[in-house]
Structure formats: structure tokens, C-alpha cells
Image 1: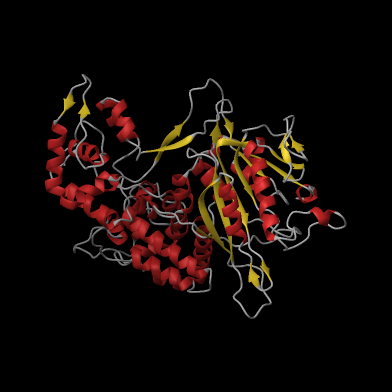
Image 2 (image 1 turned 180 degrees about the horizontal axis):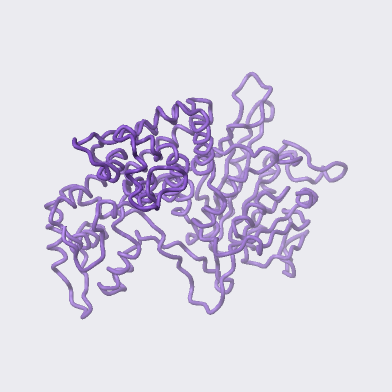
Length: 585
């Protein structure tokens, strides 16, 4: 395939969008596996004087290995994996599944050795993989030897080497188990979340986290008029200053948080469930004044048994909040694998609660794309969250899981907001192309396509791999690729017209697209759906600096919501009748 005027992909691997976790995995595995594989014993089958062969110059590796330093980078397993994306991602995915099963006591370190052997000890590989690791090393090393015959690829024996070296097996196993625990089992590290959410523009150390002593049922902005309220607990928060309210109120008839006369008026101790729900929604109405127009509420609420029957509290809350004008965008089911044991023997143990996502307007902030990136949910994340209660949460009676807070913030809180006009910064991706095509010249658009690698496809998709193979086996070039991009953006599948610098329609783009279709057949569509990537964040035109997104928990308790929000780079505020839990934490 000839290289055209635009610097688009020139090799098979150029088309693949490498997963960041797979890149990190390649480096981690290399650090521990290379010393086992790349040593003089590996090549003893070809010569008994391996070191002499590589001492053509004095630059020999200091660890006693046989490989000259100038060859070490190209011999590294990491180099091979980065040049063979499909195999690297397949190896990563199988090890991730292996270590997920290890969390529930399936398999053992032997299974890890078997998987590494399966992917790295093959003499040759077939499509979609390009070259085996044995062939890769052999093509570099064997020409250094004066061999009469055409030898088979070097036998790495990685599985056997690991199984025969218990110390090395345990070290690699422990390292990979920790790696996959961090990257695939449970939520990702905080820094990774900050980067995906765009909140890494702020230093968490500079963020605010404050809890005010006040009753959530009666809070109002400090200094505001409240003629319609019989009681008002002012707190130092402005109107329209909060982006996300995330809270979990006391559940009805579950426990008493206060004694003496406090218990007579405490939320959750109402005689009738209807009164409890009405008080909750009254409080929700109070909080509305704090929300920006684009703000959201994530409201966690559980049910209660009375006279052996569930009272349907979540459903009553949903009905009442809708009557008051709230829109319920989701009823999320939070399943709890490690809930509190139940002594009852005539019903199943409850292991779920509801989280309602409520909004006031249609134009609320929502970062579904960022959520998908963080939690690797695939293109259709669901409304079921399996989240265990956090362990070692101290003495507070109803700890809020950190992951639940993280998920709600990822979906509902912008990384930055204009404090003047309340416009949140919204994610822009390479899938949102229509406006860009209408507003830019062809040269600018092509530059944009290249910069954000719109041609990148998933190394995990078999169809994408076959599409790339057909592309490189053909006479298609970057102009055809550019035409494919144009066709794929329109709803009807018809080519949209590009304009050249003079403003004239370039109708030949349709001809190139048709030519590509004839060659690629059904695989044509693979190039019209590039891997989604973030290309920037939209903002307003106000002449002022943005502020971090702001989170508020009216029932702050020990302050889990505030702590997590601050760590992620947001400002966080709370209210509670008893601030001692927050102060202690």
C-alpha cells in the first residue's frame, strides 16, 4: 500500500488502539519474565559458546546474560507485545479472567503458567496474530550464529521454566494478582479515575470538604429569604452552586440515631410510612435551590419490613417525587454480595437497595462515556451495580461504599463548571463529528482525524482484525480511508460532501468510498465506527476561570461522600445533625 499525502496508518499495528492497562501489563510482565527467558541458557541448544558469539563488541549485558545491550530493547517481551496488539490483548483478557476466578479460590499459580505458555510458547501463530514470540526472538538472535541448517524457532519453554522455579513462579503470580486486582477487580485507582473524568486538572489537596451542623429537612442557603418555611437551618452554600447531590437518608424504622427527645422528631421514626416518604420529598424540595440547572440527585433508599411485609418505600418515594415535578432518569439496583446476615428463616435475605437518579431539566450533565471508560462496561452500561460494603469503616452504623460514590460522581458531576453562567464542561469524543464536518475545511478536518486517530480499531474485535487485513491486502490507500470516514458519519450511509479550501464540493470522495466498499465488502463498516476517544471538553464563552464540580451530601454521616469527592478533585460539602462522625474521621 502506497503512502499518500496524509500521515495515516502505514502498518497493520497502526490501526489498533492499545488499551492503557494492556500497555502497563506488558511492562510489568516483561520486568519479571525477561530475566527468566533471556539468558545464555536459552540458546545453548545452538552453541556451547554463546557468550563468545555475542562478544563481537565489549558492550555485553552486565547481568551475565548473553545479549548485547544494543539488542536488549528489541528482544524485550514488551517490544513484542506492543507490536502484536491482538495477541497482547487476548493474553491480557485471559489472565484477567484467571485472576478474577482466583479471587474466589479457583485455579492456582499453575494456571497462570499454563496461560503464559499457551500464548508465548507457540512455534507459530495464525490470524489475527502476526508472529509468535518464538519466531520474533529467533529472527533476531539466530542470524548471529553460524548455523548450517535452518533451525526451528527457539524453544522458550516458559511454562516448564516457571513450574520448575517455585520462587520465580510465586513472584510473578503475586505481581500479576496485585496488578489485576488493581486494574480489573473492583474500581480502578483514584488517579486513573481522575484522568478519565477530566478532574485531574485540579489538585485534590486544594479542594474543599466541609460538613455543616444542620437538619437536612430544613436547610436553606445562608442569607436567603425563606418566608414559606416554618423552620430554616441556614448553611453557607449559595443557590445554584451544587452539581451533584448524593445521599442516603435514615431508613424508615430501621434504627434510632438519637435518644431522649431527639428521637421524637428524628427522620425515619415517623409512625406512618407515608409521612416518612412525604418528609423525604419535602427535604428534596429544600435541596432543589442548591442545585445548578444541570445538576443531578442520586438518592439511595432502602425498604423496610413491617408485620412481615415489605412496605414498598422506594416505590412510594418515586411516586411522590414525580408528583413534585422531578424526573426519574434511572432506578439503579445496588446489589450487595456481603450484606448483613439475617436471622429470618421464612424468606430470602435482602441483598439489594435502590438508587434513584433524579433531575430537574432535560439538559442535565451526564458523562456516560467517561463511566464506560472507567468501569469497562461495554457500550451499554446497565442499571445494576454490584458493590460490596467497605470493610474497616469504623464505628458509623451505615457506611456508604466508596465505589458507589465514585460511580455516581463519574456519571453526574462535571470536572469543571463556569460559576458565572453555570455551564458545565462536557466531554467531546471523536464520535461527535457532524458539527465538526460542517464547521471546518477539508484540510483542518483531515488534520483532526489524524491527530485523534479516528482510524483506530479495537484489537479485541475479530471483525475489525479481518477488516484491517483486507485493507492491507488491497490497493486501497489513505484517500480511500478518508472517504470511508466521510461515509460512516452520515445517518443514511451516504457520503457527506467534503469541501476543499476554495469552498468547492469534492465529489470524488464518493467515488473513493464506493471503490473501498467494493474491495472491503461488509468490512467497510468497521472503519466507519472508530474506537471512541476523548478529544476535548466543551465550555462556555464567559471571560472567567472555571471552578471544580461540587458535590453535596445532606446526610453526610462519617463523610464518605465528601472524602471520595475530594480525592477525585471535586469540592464537597455536607450537612448532618451530628458532625462528630465527620470530625472523628
